[in-house]
Structures are given as C-alpha cells and as structure tokens.
Length: 242
Image 1: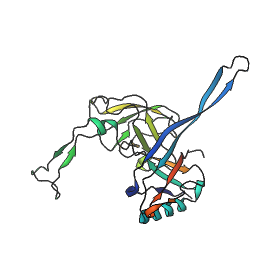
Image 2: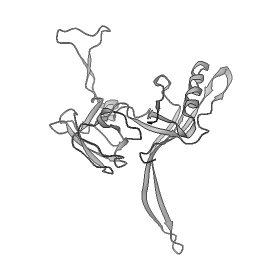
Image 3: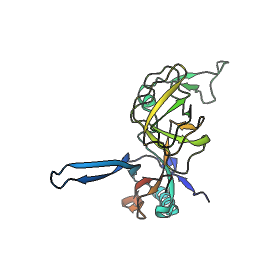
Image 4: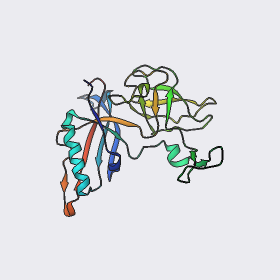
C-alpha cells in the first residue's frame, strides 16, 4: 500500500526562522601520527530543514496540532517547500512582468490580463538520464535567455507529472542559459535519486521535497499569552531506498 504524503497547509506557510539545506554525510579518518584527515564521500546527501513558524492563533494551532498528530511521528510523510526558494532567482529578482489582453482587447473579470515575463512554472526533461547522474537537459524555457536558472535554485522532478513518493528535489549548481530551442542543461546536487525519462515534469515554481520528522517529539506546541501557539519542526528528506 502506498503511503499517504500530507501537504503542509498553504494558509499556514511562512516561517520566522528556517534552515533548508542539502547535508552531506561523509566518512573521515585521522592519521594518528600527523593528525591529517582523509575524507571519503559524501556517502549520502540529504535535504534537512529546521523551521520555526510564526505564533499561531488558537483556531490555527489546533489545526497544526492535529496535523502533527496525524503524521504519527517519524513514520509519517509530508511535502514541504523552502519558503525562501519558492521561485527561481530570475523570477524573484529580474523578471519584468507584463500583462497581455485577450485577442479582442478584453481583460479577465477582475481587470487583470495574462501575466507574462516570468519563467514557466515547469519544464520537461528533454532526454533520459540515469540514477546518480548529476546533470540532465530540460526543454520548455524561453529561448535564448542567459542565466534563466541559477546557482542555488531548486527544482523538483515529477515522473510523468506525478509527484514522487520520495524526495526528488534538486539544487542547481551552475547558472544555466537556454539555447535557441529553449533547452538547457541543469547541473544538480544530489545526483538523481531515480532515473528520469524524456517528458518527465521538472517543477520550477513551488518545488517540494518529501520529508519525515527527525524524531517522534517534533512539532510540540508551546502555548503562551493570548492563546498563541508556537511550533517548530526538524525534518529529514525521505530517500527512495528507505
């Protein structure tokens, strides 16, 4: 039976403080005579997050408490976004957004038009890549755009457009420019958790990872004055071979 993966509620997004990083685990040995260290690895790279949420009002922190209880400790899974990297850097800092009308010159009923200028919310894999590969080619980007995806951006692979049951989140290691056909090669860490096929979705906007609680004690709710509740979470990425 496939596990249930719960999405953190969108209306409760946002943190006071957060850490969200790819943590390597290596084996190291020290030479007794010289003290020199020899490192082997990393054996594993895994996203880890430590999140402190704003104070929740009573109605909210009851929902949060119930959500945490539903995870049933370290056996539960949830999808989480890095709140500080929900968009590519190009969209966040450099894109010039414009609005386009319908062909008859009209706008939507709210007076807004089609938004243009940002990167697409997702692109697709252009050619198959193997498990462990640290690069793959995507297509569907604006043509000839320099550094459209950049060092530190996040992306999420969804095979056949379906969210994976394990972490399929990647951090881009080199600025990537698109060619005249809207293709770009993405250098990523960690290496691909699973092989990807041509046509697989690569999410650029709101990429998520699959996480489990670091311990059964995570998510304890601290109530204070005015019935405000404070919650923090420490999370570890769910790996496909677990």
